[in-house]
Amino acid sequence: MVARKLVDDGLHPCPIRNVLDRLGDRWSLLVLRTLAPGAMRFTVVKRTIGDISQRMLAQTLRRLEQDGLVTRTVHPTIPPRVDYALTPLGQSLMEPLDALVRWADEHHGAVRAARQAYVPPTAEAA
Amino acid sequence: MVARKLVDDGLHPCPIRNVLDRLGDRWSLLVLRTLAPGAMRFTVVKRTIGDISQRMLAQTLRRLEQDGLVTRTVHPTIPPRVDYALTPLGQSLMEPLDALVRWADEHHGAVRAARQAYVPPTAEAA
DNA sequence: CAGTATCCAGGATGATACTG
DNA sequence: CAGTATCATCCTGGATACTG
Image (cartoon, rainbow over all chains, first blue to last red; front, side, top):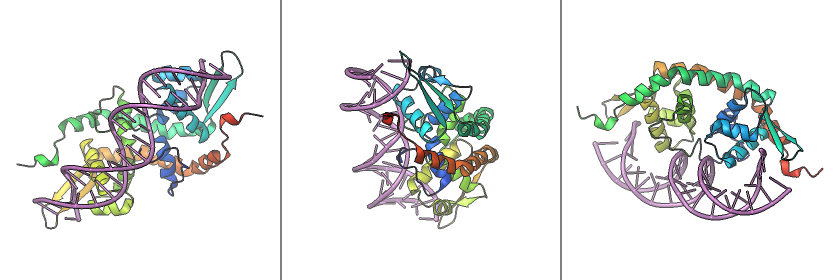
């Protein structure tokens, strides 16, 4: 989802779409899952995901924090150190999320196969 | 997810991201859920969702069909009639999907509250 | 009815550079 | 280290018009 301003008030009339739209961006779910094992520093999250830009990670973490899914803890040291962790709310999301991931894991074979076998409707020239 | 070409080969190295990226667009999950009760005509799906354009619905249905989640049945009548329905694979997705929706339904209150209470880090001028 | 083709705007994302 | 600011890009999705 995507073109709709993801950063807006998040006030889609339908509460489900309201929440799901946020998780539907490219990184939220991934970041959430990365944090699942426990608190982690900014850089570690970045390295773990690999192909996320500093900008996107910061932005995503902000939104997750804003939604109450993640906490941000600043350690006043030099160099600075900031830890991110799931809140109880964030952890409660892990369960349904894991279920979805499990589905993806179990069925991606079928999906790939379907994509392979797919013949566009236009070719109905039988 | 979003900026990445959703229509690409869908060959993200990680199978989970590969599948999830597809479902992460603005309409897929919604269309899937709309079809959950049973086969439905194009127009009915469109009306049920309400705020989806003809273009987006057609495109979304195509992708779902391509991924083996939905079937497309053409009745050679005039005017034409096309029914869409979930495949067994599509139905198997309903379960984890419902779990996610249930989560959203149960916790959107908490999320909204968090958004309300949120104070951006910059304001740390205590 | 069920789509497809085209045009267009907004926005999500990435790269780069700079700061505390 | 942990960000923020800015710039450029290119995708997503809406609107509209046309077809079988």
